[in-house]
Structure formats: structure tokens, C-alpha cells
Image 1 (cartoon, rainbow, N blue to C red):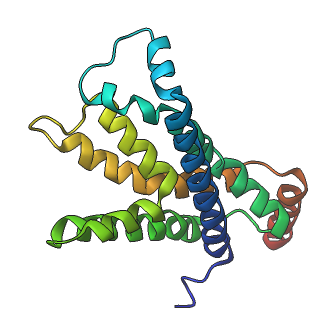
Image 2: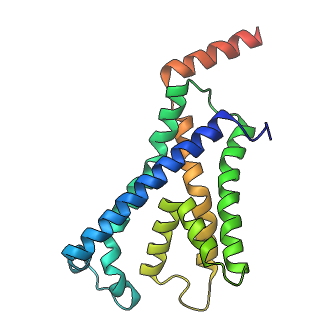
Image 3: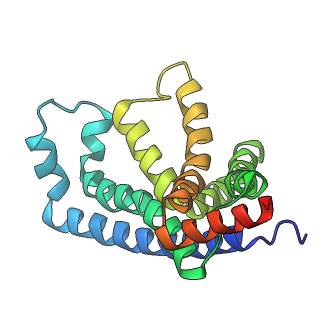
Length: 195
């Protein structure tokens, strides 16, 4: 259990909860405004291509793409700011793999159980809430593009794998971004250890 409680993983969980709550709230506000003001249909009219079928019916959800995309992009600076605020060293390979795979495995487990259990709708909602920005963004994009509506479900499976890895991967990349003071301290410690 002690191996799981790494500072970088705990900080990811904290940042992830904050970002998930914020993105969820902003998405609800964007969808409410879209429904009241008709922003989605106005955005669909501006597109250079015509929407048909399910994508046309879902045009009211276009404004939700903005907070979800921005929320997902916020994992990069969150990783860097967390490392800078807590003066954490860059994660080593073991910490990086743990940070990448532990949250993704939790998401994949909930998603798999949702489709294996006969009444798994609650688990599907739990998986969506656990990984709000990436899952919501992928769900909307798959509906717009018609993925999984034909005979092949491979795009949905691949999307589920990518969706689970995307938030921790962006956070991990953010934690590897250069911070001059911390990086200089790390290089000095490595030099001293070699001596």
C-alpha cells in the first residue's frame, strides 16, 4: 500500500478531482446556456460541412466541447504547477508508470464492469464522472463522427483505452516540463552522487 501512496500520485488525484468538478460544472453551464439560447444550432450552421443524422440531433451539445477540451488541456499546467509548488523531483520510471496506469486501470475497470454487469448503467456513469473531461469529449466526438454506430466497435474500444490514459499522460508530461530551479537542484544532486 505504501508503494501506491507516492506524492505525485496523490497530487494527481487531488488535481484530477478539482479539474473534474470544475469541468463538470462548466459543461453543465455550457449545455444549459446552449439549450436556452440555441447556441448549438447556431454553431452547427456556421460549420463548413452539413451535419446529418445523430450529429445534427446532438448539435445542441457543441458548446460542451469547449470546457471539456480546455479541462483536458489543463492537465499539462496542473502537472507542472504541482511539481513546482511542492518542490517534487521529476518522477522516476516506477512513479511515472504508477501515475499513468493506476488511474487508467480504475477507469477501465469501471468501464468494463459497466458493460459486463446486466444493470451497469450506474457503473458507466461512475466511469464517466471519474474521467469527465476525456470520457465526455470522446463520447461526444464519437457520436458526432458516427464511431461505433456501424458493425465495427473497434474505434470505441481504442477510444476507451486512450480516454483512460489521456488525463494521467498529460499530467505526467506536465510534470516533466522544465522548471529551472528544480532542474538545477536535481542536476547538482546527481553530480554529488556521482562523486
